[in-house]
Image 1 (cartoon, one colour):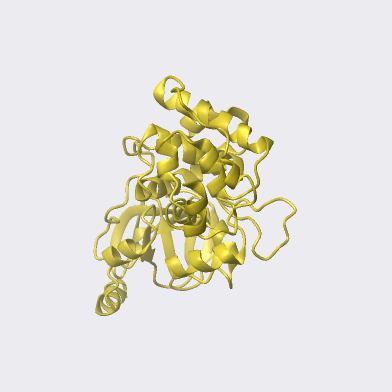
Image 2 (cartoon, helix red, strand yellow; image 1 turned 90 degrees about the vertical axis):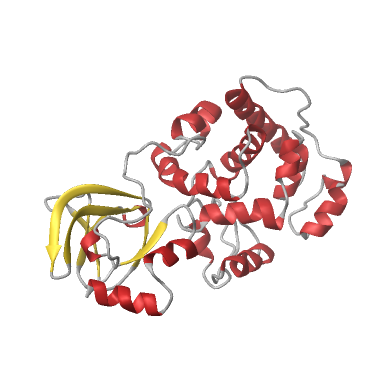
Length: 307
């Protein structure tokens, strides 16, 4: 069955490698097969069952771990796929790949890529604003990949992006704006808001965000959506390059006020951590044309006012 399903996927142009390429880059996407496949709390048959896959399922895997050997009629594997969204591990023997170890997936507990932001980093930058460290840590692989995809690869850009998200969402990928019951109220890392954002973001990724706005809360899409807003809905990296947190805040889309200074202070704290000092020339205030609510402006309209 394992090989048969792989052959079917290949005929459709959806080998495991293609599935990985088509998915958000932070997590490899694989297809399971069979029914009643257990999700276990750890990579051992003695571990508690935390869920069951009723049938073939697409899973987002962030790492893999060697554990108990599992065999079926199609093969044998001691590797287990960690699926954060399901809260546990699935044996690789029920994943539709020709190998017995997942290709391109790091081992759990391995060192993050050089330059990636860690939990210790954001705690040092933002202190008590990191209110749920475990949840923040779960999301960091996806967030780091989104930063790489968005070319958020310098201390100035990282500081601006992270300072923004820690105020938007406390760096929690699945947060919903408290008390906001609007269908298209704030969700996810960047608190995506308004049908004028949900619609274009969904079109960009090929998902129905208007029909299912809670996708913006998912581990799969929260970080990519933040990257989309930072680079597509707006072009924010150049403002970070200029240490212009005033324009960064305006680009996020809320009226000027005391929050601007709070975010700028977090920007400075992140810069100090990442570079060892706060460089001269940080701009905390907005130009007068951007002091109002800029959330509904198109990118072209915003850039005209920001110039």
